[in-house]
Image 1 (tube, rainbow, N blue to C red):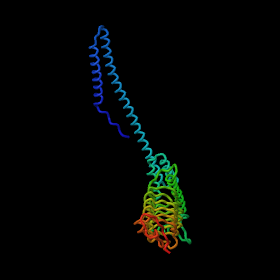
Image 2 (image 1 turned 60 degrees about the vertical axis):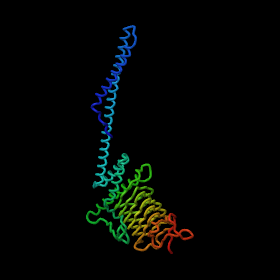
Image 3 (image 1 turned 90 degrees about the horizontal axis):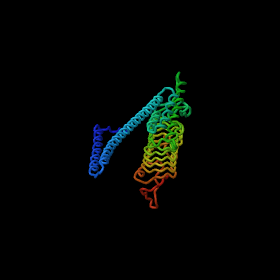
Image 4 (image 1 turned 135 degrees about the vertical axis):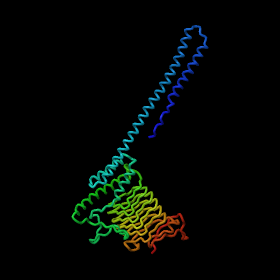
Amino acid sequence: MKAKKPMSPWTMPLVSAAILLLTGAVLVALWLWVSKQSWTDPEKRTAAQLDVVKVASGIALGGGGLFTLYLATRRQRTQEEAQADTNADNGARRITELYSKAVQQLGDAKAPVRLGGLYALERLGQQEEETRRTIIKVLCAYLRMPYTPPSDRTIKTGGVRRPLLRNSRIRTSIQAPRGPGASAALVEARLELDVRLTAQRILADRLGPGEDCWGVHHIDLSGAVLVDFDVNGFRFASARFDQATFLGNARLSAEYAGLASFNRTSFTGSVSFAEAAFEHDAHFAGAAFGGRTWFADASFAGSAVFAGVSFLEVDFSRASFSGTTSFAAATFDGESFADRAGFEDAQVLVNPGTMNSEWPEGWEISFLGEDHAVRSGEWTHLTQDL
């Protein structure tokens, strides 16, 4: 709160002098007026002069009273503002203490204590709007911390564990705990999974559509291990999932107002970007999709980078591309695209960016019009080169 400007030491002497001058002026003016009157009775003249003195005295007393009232009002307002400042400071101190305690709980060795810290942060964000952005950053930071899921969350193929990240440039394997403390480690991993699912749930509840939504925010989950992650229908200011690992199925059909970055991200199950709106650039360079993937009806308003992506099976039907697009070196588990990618009715906005794009193997921009001319600013389709 803005501090009130202190009263000048000259204020009271100046106001007192002003009241005295006004009283004197009134007294002199009325006294002269009474003196100029023709009085036949001396007693009436004397009474009139007394009335003049009474009027002047009333002016002096009234002016002094008004100034005293002003001082009292100012003093009362100052006290109220000081109390308000004190209350605000106490409130800010309480928020800081609650926040600090909740964050400390997140670092506790016991899972129930960490859960309590998450719920405390959520409750604080519900009560104090100005803390929400920070709380979202804390939740994302917690999910970015290194984590090895319990072994039943790993992927097995023919009895052999394979890396979660199918990109050969990154090798991250999840192994079951071994040794004397294996059982305890497995229990702790499962308890930590509950904590992380709670953090994901809080993000979903507070960033998703609904009355309790905390608004549109930037999220950074780079390198996070996310389980059955679902943000369908959300809207993000921007989203970073670089080198993240999505265990289970993922639903990411959201609106991305800013950059959506999934570079070298690993998806172990099916993933849906169906009807997703990428209003800025979308980067998926080096991402590995280990299950069926949907980009059907998705819109890419900026550049779309799928260079070096490894797909299992993907559907881009009815997707729209408005900027530079790259599918350079995109593969299916080491094989070329061939017929494993669906681009039926996919639309392309003709412009210098899309004309210089690298489309999937076997697909190209169709020509427009009877003269086979491609006109800038018009929409065309991707056609399969048979």
